[in-house]
Image 1 (cartoon, rainbow, N blue to C red):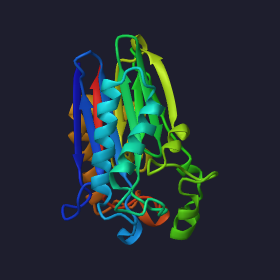
Image 2: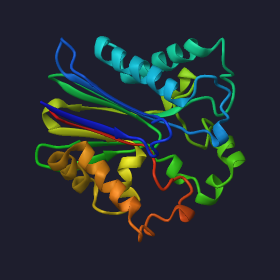
Image 3: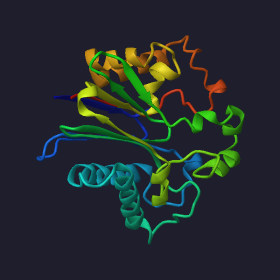
Image 4: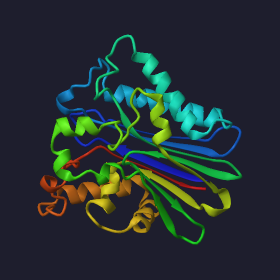
Length: 263
């Protein structure tokens, strides 16, 4: 088994709001967890702790429960992790705030029989079959929202964790029912990868290759290699293909995280 992961902040003067972890439980198999914390406009989220604190709390709980409670489906793992994280700051923060700290979620768990997955919001999961074919598991609800709507903070807030909008892990455990989940026989998966949108932009924003090509970069150059490629494109004088003006969801430099595992 090979596991490789890396994370880099979008700006050195700001904390990284991503979270990525890998665990190999004593019982065997493994767990990958990747979160992308949602940066609130002007830092207004009703919380005294902030997004990095939230991502670390939620990510740590997800990692622990995914590994220790094999009997618990991943959507239940997410629900319990959201509940525990909310309880940790319920008495000090306004959890009813529409921008209370929240994050995208990818969880992958495997044993000798199955590879289980969960995806919530716009982080990406890649599954590679033994023959090399790569399947992208996506929660595309955010992509269905017109870009002009996302340019409005008020309009985006109205769609946040709301029917007809998009969903992230915040303070309501019920959001776990909105996640994309699945289970694949272990013999049909050779490798897996998870990417926050700061790293997946190599494919979905810059068009440097398809998902199979992205996985090939991870296999050959590692997670840091993929992030380095993204940073080079972002920093190039002719980085117009990225066009922040045409894509309001994307910052010129974003926190970028990736994890790759050969099973």
